[in-house]
Image 1 (tube, helix red, strand yellow):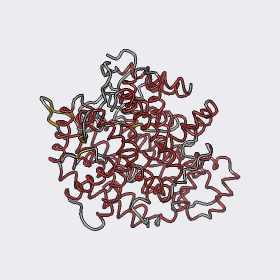
Image 2 (cartoon, one colour; image 1 turned 120 degrees about the vertical axis):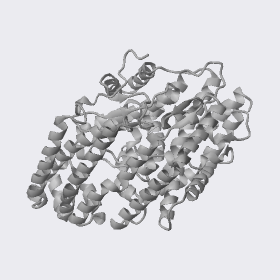
Image 3 (cartoon, one colour; image 1 turned 90 degrees about the vertical axis):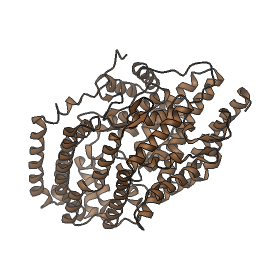
Image 4 (cartoon, helix red, strand yellow; image 1 turned 90 degrees about the horizontal axis):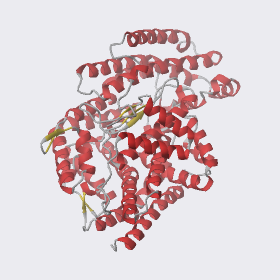
Length: 595
């Protein structure tokens, strides 16, 4: 029972409901504001009025974001509600119409002399605050079409990539997964497949998950074929040289940096990932693990696996944050006390977890699917880390408040590592220490190596889609190949694993985004080492980084901590720190279990 903390979102700070008169009023006002903006600035933009134009553009963007986020959040927990789905679609179409007009402003801005614009940024205090936005606009100049063409692409967005992602989520939310005497949602069946208490539960849940996806194979395959095709067409039209480069340009990161990281991870498959699963198999007394056992809890001590109430989990995370930073604690306490968090799984609610940013005068919202295990506490820390990042960065202008995706996972992963360290530090039982280390390494394998495999899967299917339509056989075979390469010989891949690509919504929401999970986790390894060296001095600098939002690039942030994230050597060093954890695990197992 929860006695202290609310467990449902309160979206009333946005609107009372999807039929709120205030929502309709704001849409009309924003549409009119865009018409005036078009006349005043898009058709007559110059150096002399650029500063005022950008400020007003930011104001329009912020008002639109409030509406879009509200309807999206409302829909995320009501995906089976026809009225919620209709409202979400209606607002998506309205936003598309608005952006089809606003995108012309970006085209007109790119026509200005960049040297003159840079001089103006240095001289104009108001415009200086938007430097990162303007830099991005000119960085995208080679991939920008004419104003009329950009307007057409924006209008088509509502029926291309974003529409297929929405359809993907809708299909997944409607699949019913029979399990034992129940019918489970996707979130529930994935939880049992990954973290079920017994091998039999995990196996049967994995089979049920695969069978549910198989029954919807045509719809899921259609989603992936159309997502990859629309991404390809968009990339060709916008003159991107590879499917991944759309993501790289948006994140202001070079292909070489990501290639270096992925290569370093791939080269570490055997020494880290394969080795870890071999050790885990030995701990469990097996020659090989089944795929559904890769995340299974190691249970060695006589202590029962503890289940936490939500109140207990929050109290623990708050205590950990308070030990690190008073700012972290204060923001996290607001999150839970002021109903920023939607906690429990429910019918029609999207699976997984996320933190959704909003405008500087509002606050982020956190979605969880809480079951009470240690991993759920780590998820809370992860998503609250996002929320803290988003809250701290609300002091900068809305157009530059979102960090690049490669930095967006930094605060979340750092908060998760703090929580892991807390659990390990406060445990004296060596068998329980092994359990905790394995739990931590399970997450690292998923965050670094699994996501790197996901990235390589995307690379392969996007390239194959250029040649022909993707069949279920092609998708299954490619998926199996990347999993086998990353997991190694100590993990056996049963046939039911083959189609699990079908429920990974990151592939459809934001192609090639998954590299940022690996990036964030390894980047945090470097930051955490610096924290251990410099303590309070690091915390102050770290809070400054988070408060900068999207105004600093990953390389600028790395430079503040004297990290060279552009070199392959950095990624190898970060991976070496993970390898040392495996060394410690192996030594502890030798001392305690004689495996």
